[in-house]
Amino acid sequence: MSSTYTIGIDLGGTNLKIALVEASNRIKDKQVYDTRSYRNKESLINAITTACQNIIAKNKLNKNQISAIGLGLPGPINSKKGLVHFFPNIPGWKEVYLGKILKTRLKNDIYLDNDANLMALAEQREGAAKGFANAVCLTLGTGVGGGLILEGKLFRGTDFAAGEIGHIPLGISGEQCNCGGRACLERYIGNNRLLEKAKKSFGKNISLEELSQLSIKRNKKAIAFWQETGVYLGVVLSGVVNLLNPGIIVLGGGVANAGKILFDSVKNTIRQRAMPVQSENLRVVKAKLGRDAGMIGAGILAREKGKV
Image (cartoon, rainbow, N blue to C red; front, top):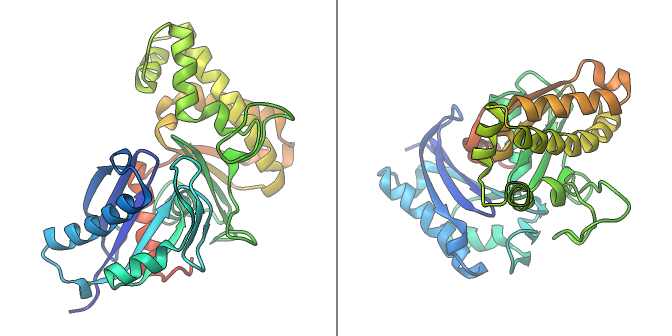
């Protein structure tokens, strides 16, 4: 039988998501596991291995029908060597040749890349940035990841580590970030920081979904919360716009579900802070593929043997 499918894996600080991806880049089947239940590196590698075996068995396929396996991972990756440098939000990973480990265990070709890169790839091929040669895509979740599509190709940089928009500093001094830097954007708008800030503001634990609903109902505190988040994001994106002059910025991840108030704040800040020529024709839109983007992108990476 011909190799019809790829497996696309999206590993985040919260979830391990795995999908069987068709040649059309549509997802045939997917499964989700809780990353936090795997307490060390070895148990997480075992979980990835088992998840691949399970999805193949569940769909009554044999190993030869999987042409390759792609993984999107939350940190700096050397995609050429299949090397994980480290994960800012998952402890215990440092200079791990995950590609080689998984190839030995799964007996298949393995391709690794940064998760935000693969979200960007999926959105540019199949989602909100389709038709745009120059796109900047962000995932706003536990971390703040960024992926760059320049002249139709994924831009990885000299050391395969480009696109870390969440680690652009917002100031000269500020809190230490998990990446080792200070005052990074992620320290202002990562999920954990937003939840801390919301608790202070409302005097109780409150979810980001509840905050979004409150802002729709015109709650002043919730509106101010999302507007401020949009300003932080817009300030950093103004610099990105001046540097790269993209045609479109795509915002994905849970925080992007805050909706119009957040997006208006981001757009207004860019309009005020970025140079006029670079920002005049810019579009800022919500990601289209939702939680499937990373898995679809990983599937594309696998199908195209890393040549994206």
